Length: 184
Image (cartoon, rainbow, N blue to C red; front, side):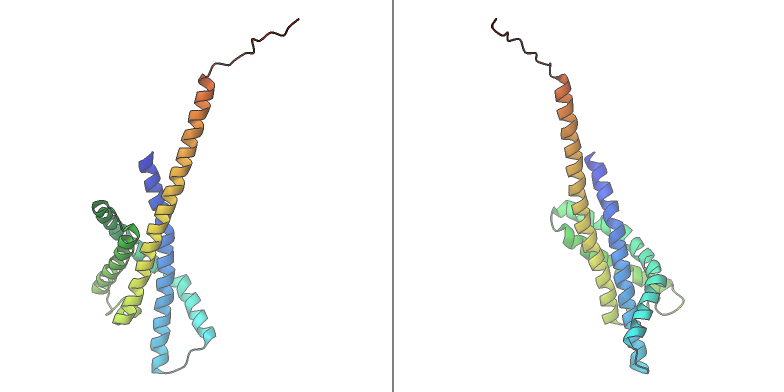
């Protein structure tokens, strides 16, 4: 039962972590693209920034979430192995694993992409740093949520176990009858 609660907590934590890293990475990518465009010519209004960000959230973020999920599927189990050996620093190792995993995913994607870089923000070291930061945050979110969900699932399992034990104990107790007599 303990093993099942661990797997459920990891799954429940994985999806929001991928979502957060993907959304954050998409916003970072958009802002770096806008910065590049505005440095060569026209100024970009606040409204145009919001429109571009929204457009990328709808169109680029799902692709980035797939990249993040692929990176996290490999990187986070490695973090779990390191934590089992070290027995501490779960959040830190998951955050670092998320960052390194996403960085490696960018390197692999850029190697196989027909253009010089698949994700424009990764053309510079600063852009790459901020994109990797989204993986770092996603890894930290995963670690925090998996710990939280694991604790909640264990509490529910224990409460159910105690309730079952209490009902079994009540059923096995003989019923007592009042044998005292009243004086006549």
